[in-house]
Image 1 (tube, one colour):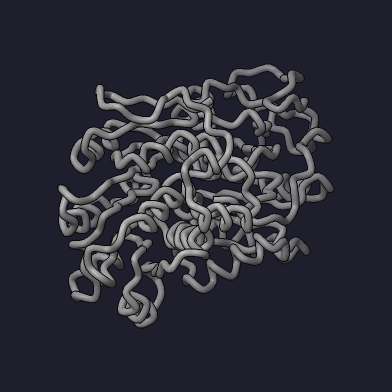
Image 2: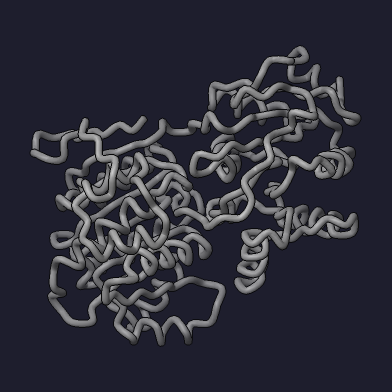
Length: 435
């Protein structure tokens, strides 16, 4: 259930107002036509909560996971306001969206293009890892909307290829991830190029840490706050399971699981790029269509792998945490933590790749003796004990004893029991990503 808090007495949208159609949100006909083209019928919780505040001109902090429709929560009202207001300076950049990863930047820019297809709005995507030439050409075409990763955009600002002094809307998307990845210095430099008095600033984050609160106090003015889920919450549509296994048996356990017909589109997480590469190669040798995606891959290779996974040509994508939030694909039936994440919040982000847009999904964690403390941290953070699966050929009683648990036959989230043949529902296949 969405909550909607303002920490001041200024009049604004009624926090209790239920806006269950896009017509009720005050969007113009060209945008409504684009939403109809995209097949959107009703706004998500974060869209209903955020859009009225943005249209009212408020700065905003939104707490929402990827996959809840948060991109539309800022893109739709920004497009509406651009459409309603003439530009002060012809050809100026009016909207800047900063994201932590290339993939997310490309998806956000694609969403702006989709929602604004019936409006005369130019967009540009500026990211590292690819040639600057095409991006400079796009910027010289005078886009109103620029979506960028901080490092590359800062390079182009310093080269005087783009000016930000006319930006009216600044969006910091996945601000917590930008902090985690060390982009804060570049972000501050970019924000300093934008006059504070004339901009509306929107910040979206999956979590609200002390650092995020400090950043919001620095960059936002009297913001409205909206949230769709508490920090570190996990969708009830995800069945969370743990398999106790010796480290040397993880590959065999994965191969065993992939034989099940319910496993249709699988995202596998490792902690290292080296492990992701090795695992993808091994799966391919075993006859499984698989690929790896991580920060050492070229941009072109990452796009090819993600596109093949989205189209169903690759059944298993092996990824590291650094690119986890850029994977916005419907129909992922299973997320498998081949290696447990180093921090519990990464677990929440990983498994949030499944059970998107109301679908059901299954998250499986392989836990060896070195990862028991990580498992305990996850259960403490999410306040949810993972369903223990012991009925499989590679079960390790020793690892189970380290966790100090007894076999569990109780249903996990989503009502699915702990037996292997209840590994999870067949995920939805195909379909267009909803951002």
